[in-house]
Image (cartoon, chains in turn purple, cyan):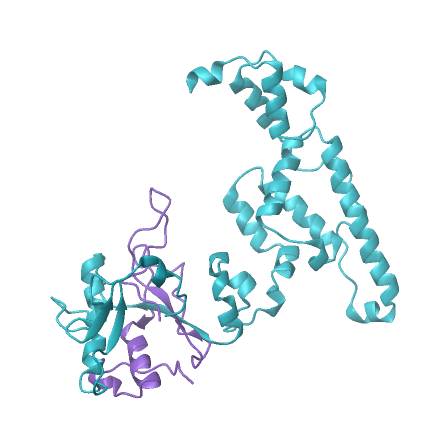
Length: 88
Length: 278
């Protein structure tokens, strides 16, 4: 599972990079992981003051690790976040 | 810099410039630049930059592939036609390179063809490759953004990158994944790679430290990271006799293991780096 504290802003900055932003995609890989796309890619035309609008709370990813992989009660750690069914 | 621009071009300079911006310049072309300032010589090249070929295009330039049943009806004729057009396309471009009054256009077109790689061997249909060649010279002599947009809609490129295999929710990796992600392609093809899209939280914090704490604590309201989400999750699930719940490689910061039992391995950086999948 990848980890990052934030995504990047959509537009390029003055030094041909991108500034600290909001939403980002994350990767999960492994033999039992169900490959594919989960969730919705944030819209590029519909930005919030130049930032991507996140489409999924990051804690849902944790809920999936806890519940789908480790069979723990994710509600104790990240209440209210539904596992994605990432692991077969 | 200003001094360089005003420097007069000698024969050897002119030859060098023309070799870098074309192929095998003729003495008359070299002479035409001698005595100009460097700025004037470069301007002359740019002003003469053509964005379209000067030779006539093959008659089949807009031809579309025949319907499948027609191909099946006479496969040999179709294959022969494909081969003939491919030969004619190669001959056409070579002749254009040799005879053009704007070799820089050909150099740029060849450069962009190498950058946005495609191949007639895969695309097969020469008219599509010819259209791509025209696109490369039209936009490749102007604005990179327009070129990039054009390449992404170019039929030959879409065929080369297997866009016909792209499905909503099931992208083919060739066009949908950044080339830097190539090492992940085997995992994707095996169905062992999940993309979780658009992750974030309300009122995001843009400080590395603050947002890092939020992700490690699984709590957007966290003030100070006391217990990471993994430490909380593993509390009460410790395997008896095990000295730790997790291994951290060369970490200066326990991250999601903060407040828990993570074992930090500090060793030779190279030894850790050679393990690709931890």
